[in-house]
Amino acid sequence: VYRFYKNSASAFEIEGVGLRYSGFPIPSYYDDNDELYQFPLDYNDIDSSTFSYTLSLLTFGALQTKGYRINKADGWGQITTPYGTFDALRITTDIVSRDSISIGGLIDFAFDNHQREVKWFAKGEGYPVMQVSGAVIANQFAPTAVTYRDNYRKTPPSPFAPVASFEADTL
Image 1 (cartoon, rainbow, N blue to C red):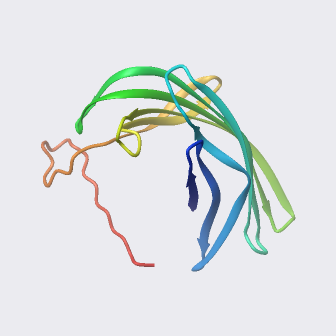
Image 2: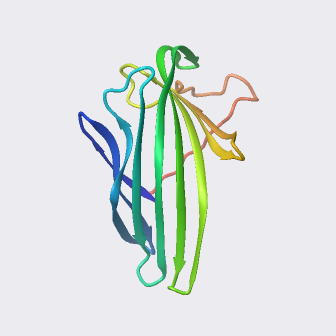
């Protein structure tokens, strides 16, 4: 799945999605763009936005998502990662959506989805220096992933350090 972003002085948003099926690209524009962040963004700011898109899977069916996101700039201070120590702004985002799948017009089902992302942004960095994300189930945040900015290391410093292997093709 691909996402198409738009950055302006007032917002950073997703304006389209797409996927590749059997080698064919299938794009779709949002009916209501997903505004990831509204600018300016300062401590104690709260913003919200709605989003909606339908991704048609040719004759097989469709995927539709409608929802809203709420951003809260709820913290500031220093954060330390293996990449360094940063003065950072913490933003907690709740993303609530209803995802619907239609298969051949015969089978339709939908499910509610509530995700939370806690991100630390540092001045001059193009993306969060750290992010914790996961699902919200029965009003409880269940983190499932932690990502952070790090330095490249040719060899792991210990046998317990995570090792990643990346492969890519030109298609």
